[in-house]
Image 1 (cartoon, rainbow, N blue to C red):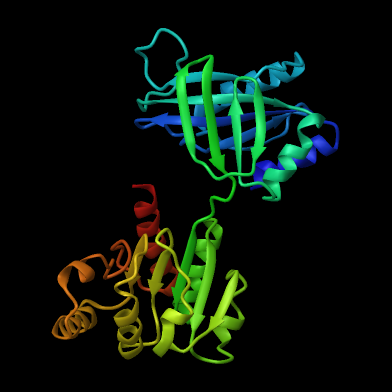
Image 2 (cartoon, rainbow, N blue to C red):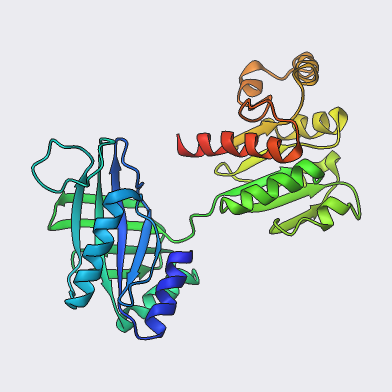
Length: 308
């Protein structure tokens, strides 16, 4: 939300702002849909629409438009190649992206505040309006450059549930916090120092692993990572949650431990389809040694799943 906070602060201090918002991204375009940056007429800016020479040129264009007191919302296509006759971004990574230019002034402050403080559910941009809405919707409608509408839910934060509050859970919480995730941490041990030191988790839960489904309020959109103190507790939890639907379910452990666990679960009637949906051994194989390296490998796999 830093871009929206930046805009709110600038408008409160009587600076006009140009919002640059990526509405569509095709191919290897560096700026993905939903990327945003803001340029104020004091030449400060915040956020990104993909970086590189393209971003530099569009920031300079935004500064020029602010100096001209430009008041019209418009869409600009950027092609990342040398084939198109116009709107070349200066990059050669291929693909393209459509970027919306939205001039903002004091009259837009209440709309920005509703986005920044999440008092509305979504916002919409068209050729002649920038509004906040009381409904949820993610949608991009494009007919031509004069007829389009972009709508996005305001609350976009991903949620991760880390079951196991030890040193790996602490390291993973720190990294996922940096990546913008909302973090739940769970453990069955009272006064655990690594949970008490976990300032990155938004919610901490002292739970009974025997009844984990009573405490784990994770949706099909959420990420769940299982990294408890040992094999026994992993099996107790996995036996309960394996039939639940999550966007990502990962299990920490050695191949030997996992093979033993899966063999026992199969003997108890768990089918291969359920076991195959588990990401294990968890993480990208980077020969992790420390808890921080393990956290990096898990985060990398989660990012890959999220962005696929």
